[in-house]
Length: 481
Image (cartoon, rainbow, N blue to C red; front, top):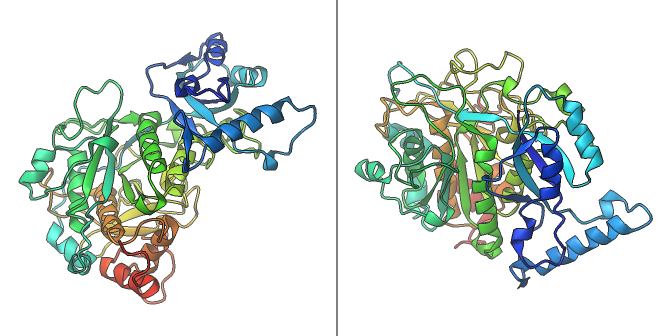
């Protein structure tokens, strides 16, 4: 059973060496006694902290040193300090594995006996939000660009210049993109491959990640691309595998983005993250009942990924958004009546779950260029935010050439991310927060007059022309870059 263990480090709060925050070996030793094996090859992921603005001491912000010191002092006080009045504690994650035959109560015993372990969470498998179709493509990428109205962005010279779009996917082939007319520059500093991967960023075989990267250029042909190749992919001639990666394979790349944002001034925080992946099977996660047994938090939240905003990965995504990143997720391809073959969600099991359903992210379903919802596009309501998907994008058209059609919410998601990146060419997150930009995207979406939110298509189909006109009317030249 793969797990994520949240641990409070025992390093001195005044330690200058950040490596001392890498983990708690004593806690790991205790866990090993019950068969929980910590994966020490997995990159360290820290949680908590703040934006990191201001002067630093040995690489750590001064306020973090003060906060950690106060935490230690309040722990030592002879009276109880109300939780709401205490600074947020800094913790680190272990990736671990526990034999399935082990009793969950043993985990509780370790949590109870060892103050360093503050949470036991599921590390579920995740998969690319893809589908192989034999149907004919509907339209072309030019049709999609016309229907999005991206010309209105480009006429204003909003082409994503200076903006990095991070593709969390299966890896990009940059040479192939150049052959297909995409001339994006690369951002190697924010690129990442999961541990054990021998290939380098931008040098993967043309596949799902390349297909996704191609879509960014619809709205943001001048954006930089960062290749976070954290997810595996089936061979082109094989069937879809039931699992492509663990959720923890993605977390270090998000940490890389977070630390990048912390180092930048607020007016320079302009970053878009596209995620064309999802869960395909609810059995990959802790059930809510079992999760509650595994020590719900102080608010009795389940310790699974699907239903718990306090899951470490969901908190990591929230931190990144709080620092100014626009995060876009595919809704997934578990919709009715044509869910992906590997999808095991039932009719009432709400497949838009986990990070894909966070209220802070833009969740994107899929329609064809004729405006019809594609039958595999996952429907709401979402698990963590009820009104999901937020919007839809176009899909299942001829474009990248990776397959006969660019299909699925995997296509719609990065296309919407590219439109967001184009808007960011004018306004940074200091002037237009991710929350306000997401609200503008939903407000300006194309939908029938008077129509509200629909669990099938959200607030409608993204309209780049309507979006920029809405923002110009509300923002004017305020904060324009």
